[in-house]
Image 1: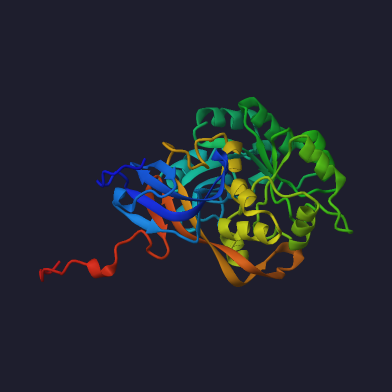
Image 2: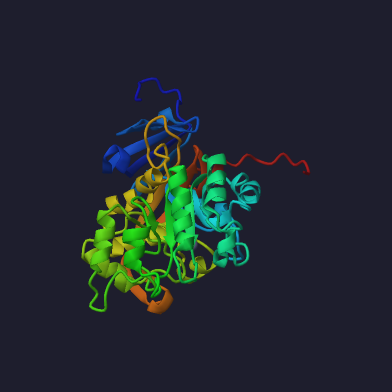
Amino acid sequence: MTTSDSRPIYDLLLHGGTVYDPANGINGEALDVAVSGGVIAAVEADISRSLARRAADVRDMIVTPGLIDLHAHFFGYFGAIQPDPLCLSTCVTTAVDAGGSGHLTFDRFNETVIAPATTRVFAFLNIAGEGMVGQPEQDLEGMSAELAAQKIAQRPDLIVGIKVAHYAGPGWEALDRGVEAAKDTGTFVMVDQTPIASRPMDKMMLKHMEPGDVVTHCYAVSKPMTDPQDRVRDYFFKARDRGIVFDVGHGAGSFSWRIAQAAIDQNFPPDTISTDLHHSSYLTNQATMPETMSKMLVCGVPLADVVEMSTWRPAQKIGHPELGTLSVAGVADIAVLRHAEGEFGFTDNGSSGNRVRRAGQRLEPEITIKGGQVAWDRNGLTRDDWSHTVPQDGRLP
Ligand SMILES: [Zn+2]
């Protein structure tokens, strides 16, 4: 809304940024974004700064919906992290815990992590009843499709699907039970299963998974998308054709520059970008959303697509199309990123050998707004200048 009346009507104005909002067909337009009462109040050109109580100059920066990390770890083992410090500081306003909890441990996860967090946290329920506490992902007796489905039916507000991961046995039981629980609840499975002779990748994607199910760690050496000649294996295209979804899930051992670049060159970009955030992925590769998005940019994925893979697509995937957009009247979850130019290095991991790739661009998290509140502001762009500090009155505290 623009009006000649100069009374502030907005809480915050992000002024002069380049906006990407794929859900609304906005791909790199110079627009201002106004926030009021926790929701997006306006996305328009040239909104007067006098209409806002607070305005941040974000010229030369990218404004997108708050980032959605489809694969992170906040519960269930030592490597899990607390969501807020590394999500909100990296423009992530929504994240999904990938199987840290199972039907036996979800309530504790919710009480201790999801409920207190400022970051909006959803869960993929592990098919293993205990989640990732101990070694339950090897215990078939603890994997019940029925009990997992019951738990999802209890908390559809927080549980968006099933996770099947790390099962090392010879058969398909873990995956088949996960798929069954997902089908019974109208959700989907995120799968991290390294292929072995008795459980090959093609059979997994073409016979055992269902359309809409997600293969995470899609550019991992352990789940090789490419053959020794760097050609994308035909059955990956077939799997995509039948609706299998491919997620980056960067992690500490699941991203190969060589595989990712070859795949993207052969028209196999990811469907969604995610971090697999945990202690090791952060320490090894700073595997945050902006960093993982930067890697996709370096591989040649256009910025508009990178934003869509990190906002609107994961929002739709988890059944929350009210998120991942800057729609007026929608919740004001917003990311402001600096598209920096310079000399940067990005490492991969796993059996690729942590090799570095030099590049001239990097997305850097500048401001995170969650529900209309400034949750992160690296350069104080939304803050008053310190010269406005009121004089102290001399009284002791
Ligand atoms: Zn993971």
